[in-house]
Length: 323
Image (cartoon, rainbow, N blue to C red):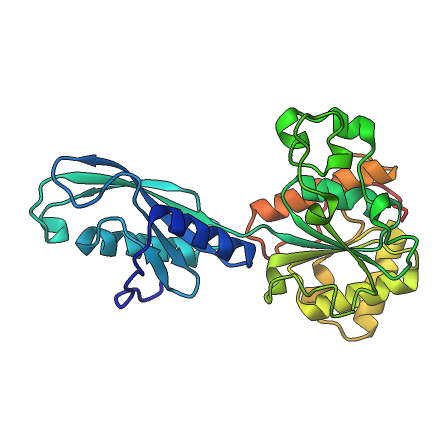
């Protein structure tokens, strides 16, 4: 539990607090937001006031100051300590327990917020070109890399129009214009959804937009070459990606793990390679494999955004997986 006794929030309007919180999230930082939603009787807090606590233990805004704010900061600090936490509506009674005699009470919504999870897709082949925009539509920040100029063409990276046109309006509106079909208000351009990089996986440019702590990020390996797949998986493990998955058959997965063991890679790291990657839905085509691996990544994100996947008895997405 962090020590917040010396934290003095910087005064700011609710709008500025929201802007600061969004900026931190965009930079890959965790924040906890507190908002006054109701006041009953005599109390210093006003509905609409906001306070944000950042992961460096600085804060901005106010929810009324004094003992109420100190108590709320304590709860926010505990929430910040957890990788995943649900919003909570807390009632603070301004009586002896807080050293106050106002007599009223305030209701404050405390919301832990995590930045979007980053996913690096290594290989812009058939699966990569389909999986990247699909993952972006699910709220992941996606980088797709390939050293082949023809493969790393942004024009290839889009969901088929019939599928995109079948999406519900709210989701289709969040997709790039080529994916949104006939929606009246197309979403952001493709470049804002999927970052396509013409480079090998270990080029510094590939991870330039990713958080320093790659334990919060995922790497999916699906290149056109088995030797390159092996090198990319070894690199992803060494860089500390929280999730490492690879497209391939069970036989390829066994050879990959054997090579990792032969090179002295720690057993713990070998065990957390998800290969063949994806939830078992009997996937065969690039689109089906993309759906399977996207489902597994959603489950990983809903967990602790850390490496928690271990070899399981359940079958992978398909007997064989192709680039």
